[in-house]
Length: 249
Image 1 (cartoon, rainbow, N blue to C red):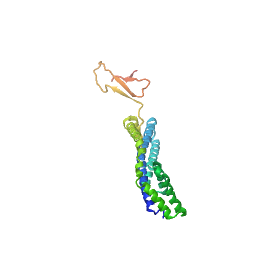
Image 2 (cartoon, rainbow, N blue to C red):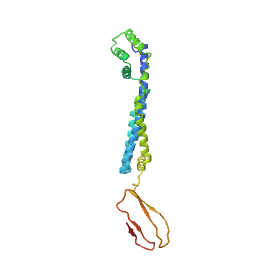
Image 3 (spheres, rainbow, N blue to C red):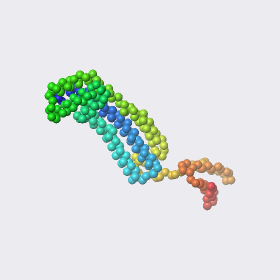
Image 4 (spheres, rainbow, N blue to C red):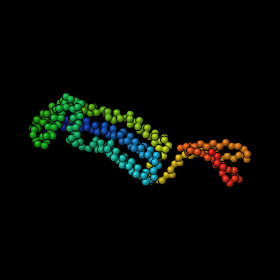
């Protein structure tokens, strides 16, 4: 008997509800940890690409490393706890749950764990009578039947990191979407198999652009440098009938 005791089975049901909810807590925590970590890694790679402007080969390596990171973190934070959630619960998990429950209900802690160990030892060596085990679990069940083990799980771990998750997620998405250089770098990483012309260090914005004037008439030409400022800027000009350009500092 022992593991066939109805009182033993009732206690296991209560522990199983606790275990399933604890796994659900891990899944909710894992979703937040997975998303924020992946965004952090992708943003880091985008910043590195922005600074170095790698070739297609290097970007391919970065993209593969990113995919491996996604796969590893997906398994660790989501798939692994989900498998535990839907799978048959191992005996060790019941013992761990009994300890956690006992920490929240000190009045039943010793009896709950001791009776669980009683069944485990009896299954190995058949040391105790079925009547003794039945009586022990009946006593424990009477103490715990009114207790809601699941109420001790309040998803505190997932709630605690949620504000940080929200701030980090919004901040990183904003960096990727709204900072032009990082946005372009993230696009290059996602399109790792394409070659891109390195962006110029600076560009000239010249006004008024194309304009015709009468000979002898004056015109004001403005040149604005966008990007890294060069040491000096020269404007080359010539009349239509002239062969050589005149340089103006």
